[in-house]
Image (cartoon, rainbow over all chains, first blue to last red; front, side, top):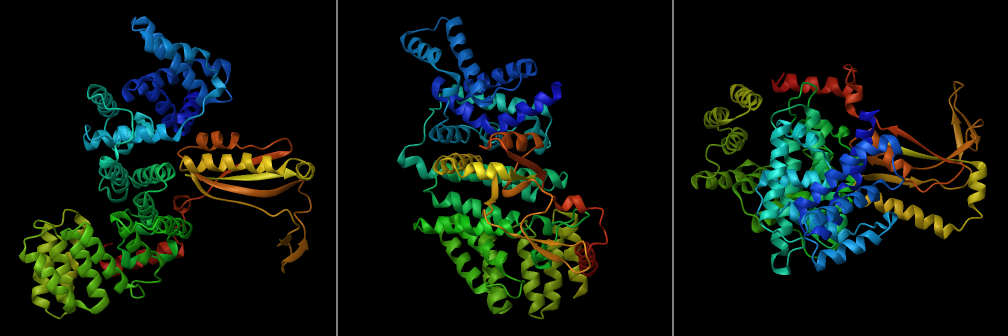
Length: 409
Length: 139
């Protein structure tokens, strides 16, 4: 059965794909070529396995076949200079069962897939493809783009990496932090695409978020001494723990305050706490992701909105604002302040943002300002702000909620 | 999707394992667990103690408690993993890699999700949500 073999091969690729490509890339020093070779080996498997059965160590089989293709390619192109001669000889000697993937190679592959020479879309596609082991079909489906578009995006990304001669190595110490930040950014982008996507079916979003979490856990295993990796995993675990409670049966979002907390995934919250604790144990302070995770943890462990440790959340937003200042963080801080000490102390924060012209064009600022004014009893101003916010909201349902609030004042 | 790998072994296999090099068993299992973790798929897993438990039987109106495992079972349930995979085939692939020997079995079962209960519209939670939507005017 052809389709059964396809599914089996996909499953093997899913588990071993990244490590196979990493092993090959180490050998040919070109991620694009390595991925092509691995795909050729997969094509061979689809033809041979229905006859021969699935080999006991399928990953080793694929790696060996791909290596042989690399050697054949060199021979054909008569590029068998001294160096390749030596590699070819060595590879011919190697026994299939010998294959032991090396974690460092997988890490090199991660950095190549997220290399700054690629645009964000290409980084995302390459990360899902070579690190996550997804097929082009799966990635295309998740991002709601035609298969041909996704295939082309991946082919171009591979060509770009080859043309730029992106080295197969981890970044130098002076680049390490920025490049690791780039990798984490790609993973979180995949997650938020799944978490907050506006189009598509619900399952697609969950699938993407699951993928990001999986890759995040792989990364945490590869660079366990990096607190921000654990911080990111913790943040994604906490946010994903609310998935089931976050969407109503008709697909509309349910706000944090209105979620049935009994439906939060306690096991997932437990994993988030463990990941954040790992970040803290490293003793290098909390970065951007760890601070966001700490805020998410305050919500995750609170029995209700009112019984949430808002004072602590205010402090965490202050810390976040110091290392990653942004109007959104400041606005969130204002909301936390209003919950901790009341709307009167929060309003000046929002007013300062408004005076600075921050978040212009977004419904966020006027909707928060409207809420605060309403709680202060300044009804006319509140109604006007909420109506303004409704006019700026991109999402129909959000607009309706804001108008209803304005009307109820 | 999530799958539970349920480890079962015959009483003979459990007995036989006592004469085996336990260090080796621990190492093989440790390597397997590490592979699951490195692949980012392991969510949970526990082993069950090799001592007599008890069984609560709900046949009668009042539950009856008795010693030991189920009377008619020939295999002992001695541990589990929960893994998150993208397909049934991937779960199968992981299951076949588990370092178990003769007399042992892995039963692989999908863990249910909220969507499995979508038809239970009269469920308490779903009704509660409907109530909120009324209150919020987002219905």
